[in-house]
Length: 449
Image (cartoon, rainbow, N blue to C red; front, side, top):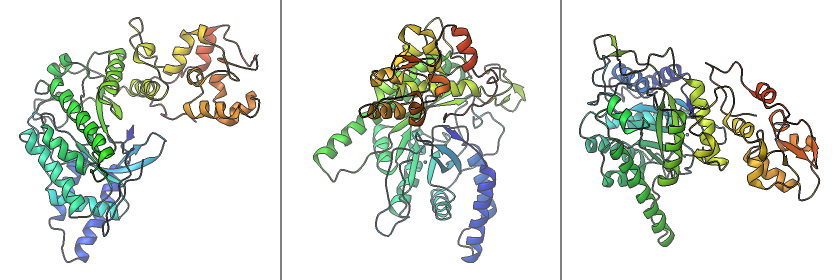
């Protein structure tokens, strides 16, 4: 998940530094004012793409180069272990031939249009990195020409950063829909991560809001990546000199709330993507109302009339996603036909626990790892600590707290040597105590400490 915080201030400071650098070098950077406008336009146009985390890569520059991408990501991006990293997140161009109703860069939108050159992006990335404004580059683009032509520009930028500028930091490139396998292969040689955004959960929704896009084409790009990744991995086992192919894997993004699909449909799709394409991450982006239809100033009737983005729903989907990725839940366990939406006031793990009282209480001193993962308030790390600790000494409720268990939640679902802290005699009472009664309309924290 990422948060786009303080971008304008940071970019302004960064641009001022580049201006000073230009003057000190006798005007080495040309067209400073124009470049500043490009940064403002193309960074602002990129902020709606959520799929920009940078975990999973540990590349570094070669001899005489600079930069390194540590395993972790001017937007703020959160890694799986909670670290915050900064990425220069821009579009190569916001000129686009597509007319996706939910996109601020659609062809019918009345907005300023601009494009970087490859050299401008290379220089910006290098100078921002040297000044410690960023730890990597996230580069996407509008579809201003044939998809292969657009993809070639993104690849040229990454390749020039690596081979000419000596840049060894993190690079994330977007796969342009319709790009061929050959270009995906080349992109993976220069970038740490690639992503192909599905954006909408069903073909019906794509045809309604983005008729120029095809789910089949996007899934085809994911499949190409998955096949190439497996091929390179196999080659590396046999030939040590085989280059790395997008070591941070691939990701995608789903927009939440722009169409009528329920949470169950979204979670089922995500589970299928993880299984079929070995995706590293699925990102969920709450739909931000874009206002009007083209230049007419009339609201687009295809879009929902909502006062703001559904941030709580986005947060609950991230929590459900973590249950699939780290807690060994499958999509069918999280939601069923009778409950197609996640509870806005209760996290999905606690909601599951209250629906399955027959599974509880879990005896902490004997339960296996899988059973411990099902207990609200016990995470994967805490479950491993519990199993390791009980090999050498007996556990108590106080020791569970020290091991990291959130006893406010866990107390209703566990026993320790047969003893209870609190029994679930009235599930409605437990639900009331554990629910976020004031959660509606608020952005909830992703990480619970």
